[in-house]
Image (cartoon, rainbow, N blue to C red):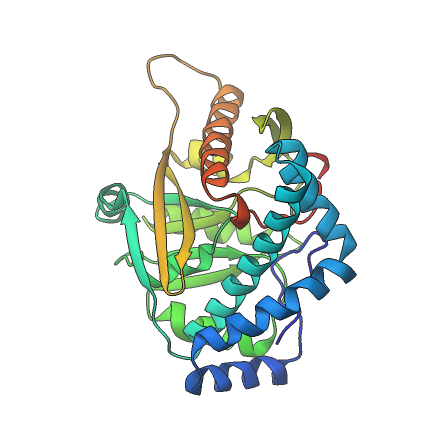
Length: 297
């Protein structure tokens, strides 16, 4: 079973290509609950040997959600277990297994997908965002920005699965050339998907209130939305049970009754996203997968 690194985890699943291919092969012939059971036994070792990740998520439950010590400890275990399930579910899709999705506010996504204009989807490291690519299907191409270098086995399976749903993956480049690709996609009326809850790739940010304290949120998606005059939505994919997920589609917009400056619009859009994110995390606290001090990133 692949190890998942927590320290400022940037989207890379640890393990060799051989391990990943073997896991996918086994999942074709084995009930997914067997792997969940193994994960339940493995989680305590993650908690023991990955002290940095443990301390940061424990602090989140204690300091941000104000849980008592024992409740915080059990929620740390539940959080690690849920994270393991999310990773396993991604491999399960590669192995051909299916999941059930309930979509809240689907009409918002559908109306944008059926329009001639491009739009932006904001993602986050909460729940299992990748699963949105298997259920929110559009005739428009979805250009998904990705961080980190996954193994060839994972990338090939992602391409096979997501490519069939008209999703094109774009990797972050050091020369920032990915920005031109995303802008061109929006100009062509396509969809752009961007992770928007971590300071990766660029230092440009805006401070938003998040769980009672200001935190940094990257500005790239909001600048792109304003410059290209395209709408934005936030999508959260939350695991409910073994094979069931709930997709939450939320609007991210600026009030139009006043003439705001570009800087004000950026701040308002980021604050709207941060508010939606906090609401979702409070409802699903064990699916918050940022294993570092988010407020000091």
